[in-house]
Length: 393
Ligand SMILES: Cc1cc2nc3c(=O)[nH]c(=O)nc-3n(C[C@H](O)[C@H](O)[C@H](O)COP(=O)(O)OP(=O)(O)OC[C@H]3O[C@@H](n4cnc5c(N)ncnc54)[C@H](O)[C@@H]3O)c2cc1C
Picture (cartoon, rainbow, N blue to C red):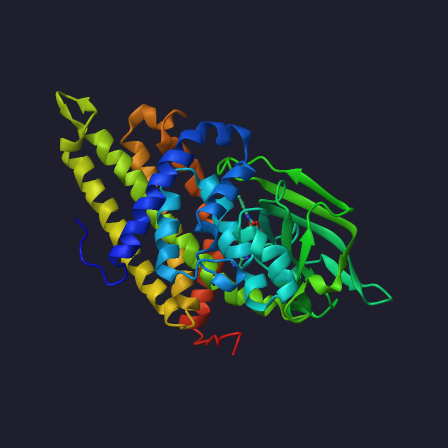
């Protein structure tokens, strides 16, 4: 029996059941294989496309389902309950980060050529911001897209790194400099087919998120038609800043759900494992830690839901999204560490999912904007009273 909710209706809960079943039947059984292969198969994107899961945040006009944002929250929560940070990342980057800009400001041509097949799961998308020499400081990127003399093509040169879906993806929303020396006012977004001549992709070896494919991508004189520009030239930085709110909210929703999953596994183990003639869940030292963990998760969840609600009201939620990303990624790291402790030696053995959760949680405070950068943003708002305005006004 569901408790009453300010946010979720019975329909949302029915949808939750169907996503949970899908994850349990069609994702979880492949965990070992996908983690070992360091990627997820294209067929799972196609299957999720068929089920309508990849079109949740988009209207029917572009092939989406036109569902309200709470369906996305449910979907992301259930996605994170697969217990495989790599899978969760591959799907959430594809759906909530890489094609967002095409939907918001892209031409109809780009929507038909890239967004529609991405929603159908026929093409896999990546978003490339980070470079070997520029991560947190986006305005310092060096990859250039310069127009040819005839003006109908860009020629792209540079390198990106840590790009999720980068090795096997079909296209990338690429962040480039279109005006040298103009800092944040010279950045644009361009869609690039990842099989274009001049592109070299190298897979990176990570300590966690094994089933996600993370790549370094080099661009040597890669030619792209000017029609692949997303929105207005030199407005890319502002588009990125706006979409980071959603990206951070998505990360926060998944971090809370991932922490809850680690707690659920731990609660089960506390009821199975015995020491000194009783279940370990009866030791007060453990019970009190578990009480702290459960409290941390619940507090985080309610703040994230509140931020989601503000987001659905069209509010500028830079402060809340940054707080949510900071608090939940740090919380997930602490929670998983505490939970692993109660598995004793088994927590350190690969066969136990808590070991994977421990490796996977580590990157949460780095990727998608580090904790230090979140604190910088929050401090600007709280200490310097900086106010952010909507980009699309
Ligand atoms: C597994 C994985 C997947 C990723 N996926 C993608 C992707 O799909 N697309 C993409 O574009 N990027 C992706 N990233 C990149 C990620 O977003 C960056 O790693 C992150 O933004 C940090 O950038 P950096 O690694 O260059 O660190 P740096 O910016 O070099 O920072 C190094 C350290 O300095 C700190 N620091 C930097 N500036 C400040 C400051 N002003 N004040 C205080 N401390 C500061 C940072 O917090 C960090 O601790 C991914 C990364 C990983 C590890």
